[in-house]
Image (cartoon, rainbow, N blue to C red; front, top):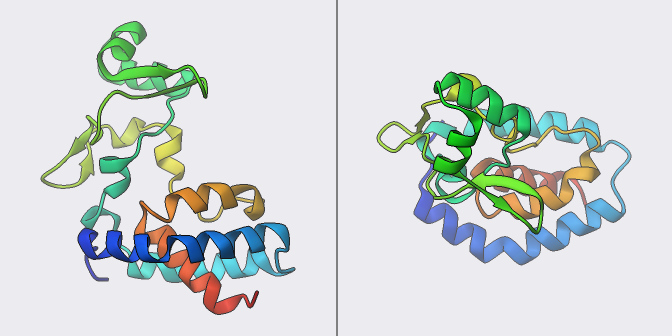
Length: 167
């Protein structure tokens, strides 16, 4: 497993963004019958190649959505009241109705180790990221279209899909 070179990844992602999004739209509109088999096979291969701890770009460039359960669990873990936790770390996005991090990189990311300081109680959105094996696959295509720019695992997944699925 090679460490992720973020600079190189960002250049590749920028260069291939349009082609990947176009491909994903086609898959979304006309998914192959064996899409779940492809996803399972590709997912296993991707995680043999990608080391998240050498990257942590998701924590550096994106914010998870914090559910009410997440806020309660994390605030309790940090021995804070929920309103204190929200006031200190989060803002409410009126447009989408989501609680998000006030700043990036994530306040819980240890920048020296790329490890999450609240890993045991991290938001459900973080625990599921990058959502590669979510079923029904086509319901998450829009998520992959966004994540392909931020996540080397998603990028590699789409690259492998393109090798297996002829459109």
